[in-house]
Image (cartoon, rainbow, N blue to C red; front, side, top):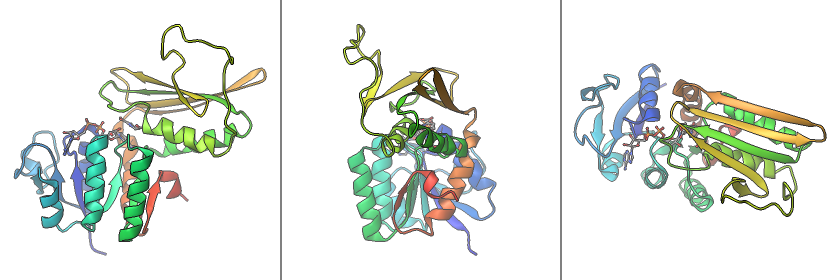
Length: 266
Ligand SMILES: NC(=O)c1ccc[n+]([C@@H]2O[C@H](COP(=O)([O-])OP(=O)(O)OC[C@H]3O[C@@H](n4cnc5c(N)ncnc54)[C@H](O)[C@@H]3O)[C@@H](O)[C@H]2O)c1
Ligand SMILES: O=C(O)C1=N[C@H](C(=O)O)CCC1
């Protein structure tokens, strides 16, 4: 089988640089280029701290997609940029694997339509860590029996979007199995705005941002005389890489958009 030819967008980022190491250590993966706001025309191997890979950096994304012979784009950038890259990749016949979070529901639907129109697989996963996927699935299961639930997500303080993509996805999975409900006292009042967190279908989501954190989430269920907490911690960004690898492998076998790694796990 021939190598999977990959473009990485955001190669100098915390996740992008980890994805480069994954490619370096995966014999069947080949980095053919990168998309970066800076360093146009330089090689990845010229940049300090990145693997010694002989792939060119492009600042013009359209030029990169037209000139490079690529199968897959791995996007690990920021919400607006990631959305634009995903659209352009599909328009140029390249299958996107997207870890970038913060896409709106409307953007996800547009990308689903484009993916189907082009008959090209797309994987968008708010969390590539297998443990986090299980935490979300266990939460969906628990919500059948414990409909009162609050989510506390904790991330490093450089994160742009809040709530996290994982928290939004968790809430969506819970919404599939519980009726809409208002939680807490019906007459509760916030004396400091935001004290009760974001409100997603009655579920409260609290976002913590602190240096020292990577990616963490607790889903707390309350019942009569008991609580259940389902918790996941990513202590290192390597935790996301087996999921990225799975997504790159699977995106070549599908012809639609898959939102969430759980849809690719057996
Ligand atoms: N799905 C997951 O499992 C997962 C895990 C961690 C992070 N994330 C998401 O991945 C994204 C990146 O996270 P990070 O921690 O690596 O952030 P980061 O800030 O460390 O890296 C983002 C990179 O994108 C680059 N970038 C910005 N605009 C660009 C453009 N126009 N063209 C090319 N590159 C551009 C920046 O230069 C930067 O290097 C975020 O959306 C984050 O929420 C997802
Ligand atoms: O570091 C981040 O940013 C992360 N974002 C994802 C999210 O928004 O859910 C999860 C993993 C880390």
